Image 1 (cartoon, rainbow, N blue to C red):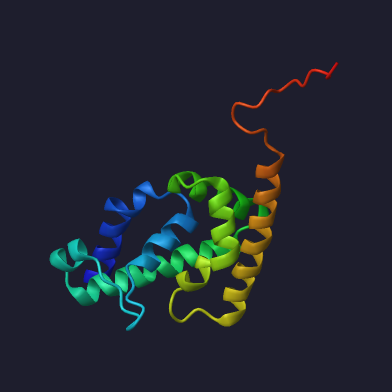
Image 2: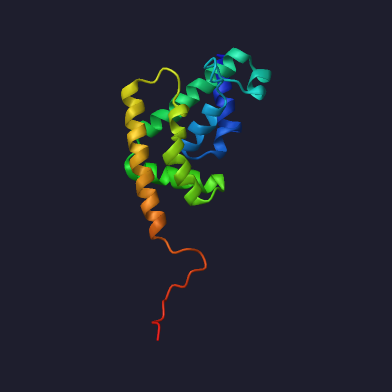
Length: 151
């Protein structure tokens, strides 16, 4: 019962501001210790228990991942764009880092089957390429919209 209460608390207090599953996935992955695979959130652990907090975080992490498994490519492009905007990182830097580092690979919840993981990885790569193409097609801020002919 504590796990359900902790998960509800997490959704109401912390995750409510994170409207996109990708943002929630990245955040929840950051609460996991990569050496043990256990999740920790000080506020939840204090209100419930470390075990309940860990299980609640793991469950919400899986939920966010499953939303990405079910997402269309267009939805994933939107997810990436919204996440990019929330980071306040220059779009070019974001694209370079995500193509090179593939940070989504370490954000997969424990126990997810490899087929689902590879599907999300593949779809995120395609969505990233689409986003990169769309960003390249946008005019630079401050650039003139009308080019006058050179005389």
